[in-house]
Image (cartoon, rainbow, N blue to C red; front, side):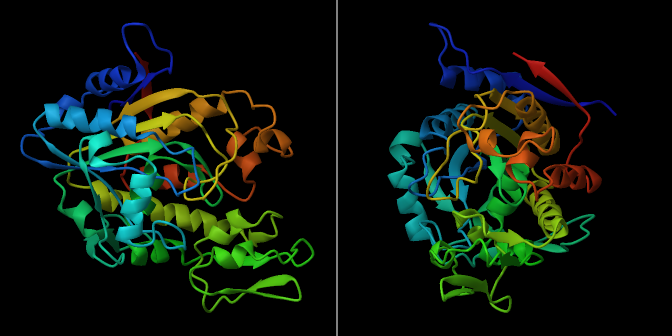
Length: 368
């Protein structure tokens, strides 16, 4: 079997080619024109960024992808599914408004926004997962299922539960409805280190299910109400909220890979990942910390597994930026992602994705 091809270009530009033109050249060199877009609906899966977060991808990049689709005769639309936690994207109206606030309008991107799982996050379709070990039927947003072609435009970054937030996460977690997200998160329930907790209440503000209470300036989690979304872990300024064991996070990653397979299986697919502004937390946070490494570049591939691995391995070669969260963390591992979030295993989603046939870790990196 031949190696999967991952195409790469740096963020360097010339007077004759800006970054958006370079992104188009990357997509065309990577072979996007092999897809028949003629009069086909193309879902561009993207993260619009939680209001207050500034590390999400600029709308200009989405415009570049949408313009290529239109030049090839397709009908592009930007999409994401509603979130499980409280914030600016938990229903379609607030989600679209948040996208507009962050600059994603039909006038800036050249295409419309369709929230994949509908107004309240419950408009999903059960999609079988071939070779699924944890998920037999994934709950995928209906608009995404209805699309003829799946494209993804990903901001590659760290993640507090899965180690990295790359293409697999963008597709798997991002295309699951609210019910699908609950299913993926259901194996992990957080705990509170009572000695470290100061009772600030940030965890309660970020819990959409009323599972966390603060008494005598100490928080506690009701596991009967908790869905295991992990939002409280990232919200805690004292790092007092934690996952009890690594297996829960690994299972989340396995389920996420299986959801990603349900999204793309049987459809033409193409994926782009930008390793820039590599923040220590997900863009779902209403804030962003400084990047942990320098900007690397733009990657593209038909294989989401190979793409994530190529992005991760390129990021691991970068120096740690002074003053970043990673710079301040203990260096117990020779791994930027594990040092940033020691209870995570970023390889879990990639290795399981290869195991179930989502893609391959055997890749060739081609720089343009």
